Length: 143
Image 1 (spheres, rainbow, N blue to C red):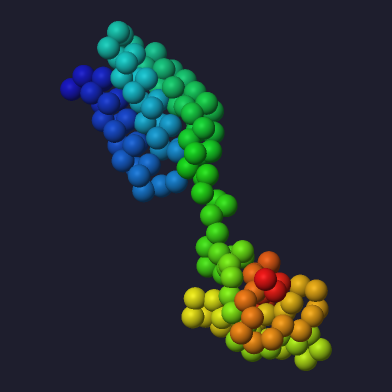
Image 2: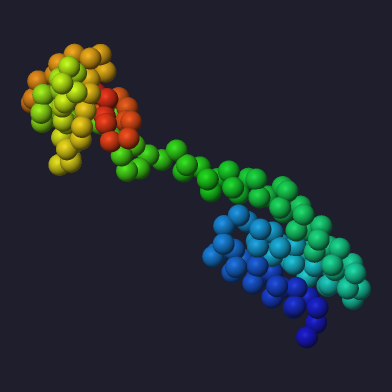
């Protein structure tokens, strides 16, 4: 089998491995292997093919990887779990009384311990907006 086919197979395997591993490292090796395959079309010298593979891998890792990671990691600021409660509106299910350190807020059927932002009492049945979350305690304000 000709070297250009071996390089192509290595490139394809690099991309298949990248599907199962994060970081764009295997894909960089795959791109480098395609550089080696392109070089193998013009020369039979294995040293030149390996140099082309190394240069292609380096270029893809240094130039393409940062762009790839920027677009893949864009979703880091997506709120999930309890952080998704911030900005939501809930109903006070138990009076929020700062002096007694008590109070609860119901949001989407879940009941959370709550404190008022300014330390005032909020009666049950009032609508509140969640401002922040500290562990399992929500800080809310009356709306």
